[in-house]
Image (cartoon, rainbow, N blue to C red; front, side, top):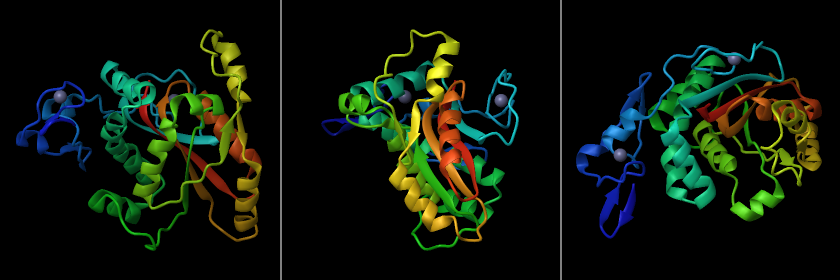
Length: 270
Ligand SMILES: [Zn+2]
Ligand SMILES: [Zn+2]
């Protein structure tokens, strides 16, 4: 939905929106309110209904030979990365079309619900689905911390914002969890798309670094307590090979002095 004068238009097909476009969509018994889309675009989004690999959330055959208990336990995605999703993400990231980011944010409800089911946080799941947002102070059985995949300082200056952080704050809000900026990305490696798969993999492994003062504070707060493992959720827009999320998870795991389990929540699964 965007406005020209008094009228509002579908973010995807640019059709004029009418009151018939207001209805919510039901995916896996979850009511998702996508106000920026017309009804037919809402239903044509490539929701992932059946997952072929429960670890990386591949909807087609998984060639990653995923095993559990690596640094990144699991990834949860909402939709397949098709041309429409790609275009919406492109206008958000590269043209700064915030409406596209806002339009896509509610889709995170699906991977959040899957994550809560998987980690057996059923009371929180009920609240998230029933009320969307809820107020601070309500107890949850597990403790969640949300963070995002960082972009380099150079990119941040060019783009003005980090799309993963934009989505991560939405996820944190839904989960009633704190958003903590754990990581930064080294400058000078913005253009690595020309490298081959192996070279890229090697570079990505060392790109993400922990913010020492942030982790020191968390370590001193959490390490000397007898606590259940803390769930750390890394949010990103797209999951392709998983190398980025794995590199981030590895760096966090290496630096934490308290028990934690690391999960990924992403909008699109390529
Ligand atoms: Zn439409
Ligand atoms: Zn897999």
